[in-house]
Length: 137
Image (cartoon, rainbow, N blue to C red; front, side, top):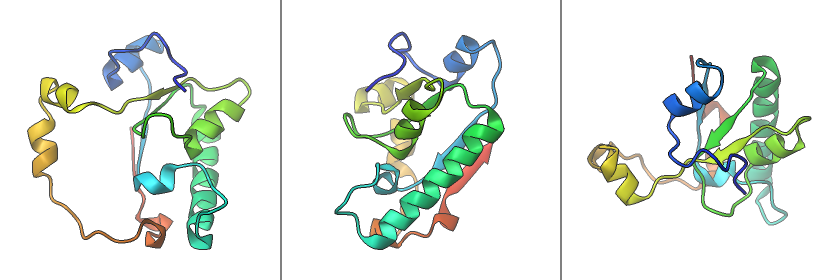
């Protein structure tokens, strides 16, 4: 579900210009499995982490008066952030910013993404929320 139909060539810069010329931003870097909306079949510890993530995002949305959410996620998946965006009054515009391999190449980031250091693969439900990466302007 794409909440911003007119923002096809989306970049953070274009979003900033779209929203009154300047904007603050918050980047939350998490495992893709953790970002998905809570499901009955999720293990208990993953459900707890998703609840923590939702509380964190809800607090940041309120504290920062968030006007737009951009998120990289699988097409058609409902995420914690999307759910919060839709339930907000008024709803917060939301955009999936996942790039195809071609778009990454055209943007000049494909090589860097392929060469970035990896990390040991661990089950997504074992990642404590304190390991979430957060950057803000």
